[in-house]
Length: 298
Image (cartoon, rainbow, N blue to C red; front, side, top):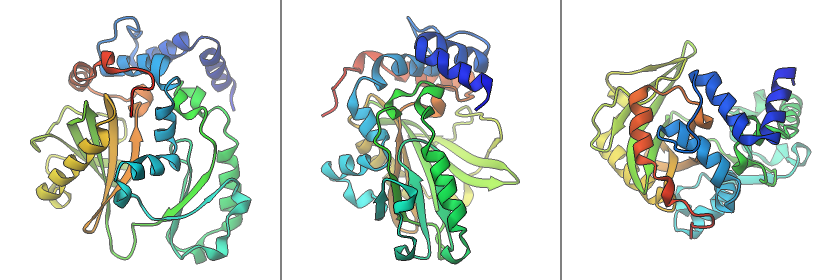
């Protein structure tokens, strides 16, 4: 870890408000209005400071293993990707017992995934080393002050690999406020290092103003991955999943005729996503901070 990274984490630990303000300034060249936030990304900083590390439900739902229990208890077990195993250490994984294709992921963060499409071609020793390295990341929650990750008991989750055998896995993300989707988008995937995606509103109209993240291109036409009937069904599912929360991004996968739960995200882009102004304003207006109470999800 470099000196700048260590300094950032130290500031976040000593003075969270100063830490998130400096991170916000680095991204937007202005400081957030933490006392009276108006924009979406400003309100996400407020939630980091006042809600996410204090209400345990956000820790449960940020945990890629415990969230399965949360959903099953609410009648959404059919949306869960089949579970192959849960391990406390990489060394505990019984490689021989796993199928030819699978996914391994740590439960406490984002991007700590191993997608295996062929066990015969997987370098298992390298995979174990990588999982160990990720698992030793003690500062994940502190980098952008996302305290919902801080107290997650660390486990490695193994799930079926749904994207094989000619099946195309499409990743849909739904921004939901008070149980209603405001904006959704679907990622087509990487082409020459560029993510192609398409965003839409609740009436399935094109929303060209949604996200403008670096390294991405918004498509003008959804073409082959925009099945209106399927997306309306997914919106209905996402809104049901979002009901307990004033704000959450619900990720769903479409695989063949099946729909699967991906994850809950409570701090989209860490609160530092490069959104165009229109989206920051519209989503900020939809996010009602008065709706939050610690322990308020039942």
